[in-house]
Amino acid sequence: MSAQSVDQLKSIFRGELIQPGDTAYESARRVYNGMINKCPRLIARCADVADVRAAVRFGADNEMLTAIRGGGHNGAGLGICDDGLVIDLSHMKGIRVNPSDKTVRVEAGCVWTDVDHATHAFGLATPSGVISTTGVAGLTLGGGIGHLARRYGLTIDNLLSVDVVLADGSFVTASSRENTDLFWALRGGGGNFGVVTSFKFRLHPISTVQFGPTFWSLEEAATVLRGYRDFIKKAPEHVSGFFAFLTVPPAPMFPAHLHFKKVCGIIWCCTGTPEQTEQATRPMRSVGHALLDHIGPVPFPAVQSSFDGLYVPGLQWYWRADNFTELSDEAIARHVEHGSKLPTMHSTMHLYPVNGAPQRVGRSDTAYSFREALFAEVIVGVDPDPANNEKITGWCKSYWEALHPFSAGGAYVNFMMEEGQERVQATYRENYDRLVAIKRRYDPNNFFRVNQNIQPDAVAKRSARSGSPGDGPPVS
Image (cartoon, rainbow, N blue to C red):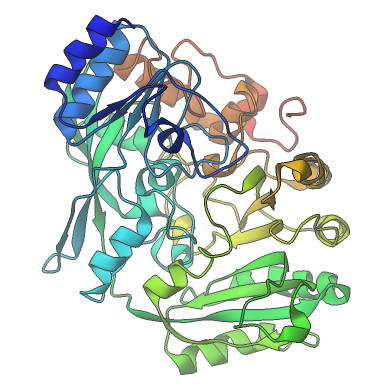
């Protein structure tokens, strides 16, 4: 990358080009996970699609390692790279809600709080995640698991079309009617196939939901997990609630005697009426002796942002994840053993229920393959202090290794670190070969490779396609 080539890019670029030594460089290279510390040679902060096309061509012409950044939440830090180019979409914030046909068009620099703000004015929402500062692009392209999944499906199940800049700088639209193979791949295949510059989503009539926690002591964790496993299989789809091991934060909303206490709990988010929610959740909330039990009406944007203050940008994060089709009593015993040893206040384990609407989509209908899963598990070691990195990483790894033999053999890609090619193949299973063929067509030189990479010359191994528990070697 020469100064002359940068000057040529600058002459056609409406956004901001940021290099080491520039005032904005240090802030521009920081991502959500404070454990990630990478230094790109150039950050191209795009103003529009024309900028994206120019940046892609620049990266290809200069044979630069190129990362695509949306909201920057990716746990593995795959929106940034060392000594390469970052195409930063964070200033592309356009949103247009169409209330007549219940859709929204969202540019790729938006985070979910931007979308929630725009759609809530019309009493509408689309399924997303659980933290409002998460980027729309990254969450969507990986699948999209969150509060509304059981009733309305994953985020990709509500995706109607996308605009994409391909590896050669060309621009296409993909949907169920055009470039259908690309549209299939982008629904779960991550950033492997191009830079998605905008998304069109279906909206649903969501305004106020029934939200709140039920907490139990750790002594009751095994009983609660067994009850939750059986309860969520039969619960009406308007009921959702993820199970967690957590430390109660010292927030005013929680009684002072619970502050810093390690507990297990369910965080409820239900889309039925208060009466429907009470009737449907009471059997689970009556299990054991709850330390705290409260569900009440909350505007959906407030639900989405309820964890933002606890999980602020810049904390140290280490993630591990798996999908589960069942939760045996032995697996529950291991959860209790490791979940009871939370190493720091911010560290946690979540079991997200993904039965219901997501299971009505076939496992080969989108790149996201684990449609038969009951839970998506994520184990996260989190702390503000880098001095505790070894502690949170070690706990996370040991917890994951204890539960992985009981898993379905692959993870939700948005919850993965850089764990190796066999792990990627195990996640996509029999869909991997089709993804390779589509990658070969749209990105034969693997320009888009700073991701959970689908290699255009890869051949999936039979063991990885099978999705059997324990596929692949231990990962670090």
